[in-house]
Image 1: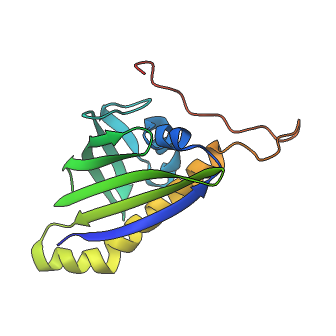
Image 2: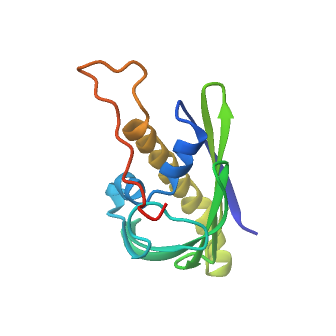
Image 3: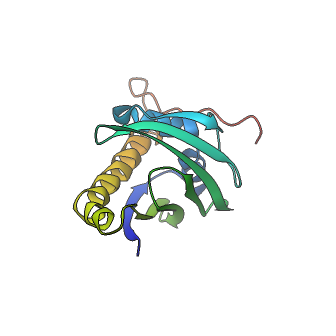
Length: 170
């Protein structure tokens, strides 16, 4: 049985803006500098779309990992899911939802995963991985909102955030 957790993040951005930001490879790489994450295969820059894959390389918990994910479902601008097709987990699915809320958006990330190695893997899931992955998603979301959410009342001294590069295929 997989472990699951949910992260909720509020933003003044529209569902479409957050939908595109969340599937933007460049924005993701920017949010993961602490783990030296980079895209090394598949779609490596711009927006990733349904059916496409990206291979990530990163350092987590002192170990270098490679993981290939595929966008398995996409319903613009309300949700998309990515799933590991190759990598360290027995199973990993990340569902991204973007719900209009007042003048902004509630972003809901649901992550389900299972570690390999039977009973030992289940112990590591509960003692280390669930907390580590949830913190990773929360920090990613904090970065995305801080870097790309337009300032509430921009002035000459307060530049507005820039949107990451758009995929020329779109």
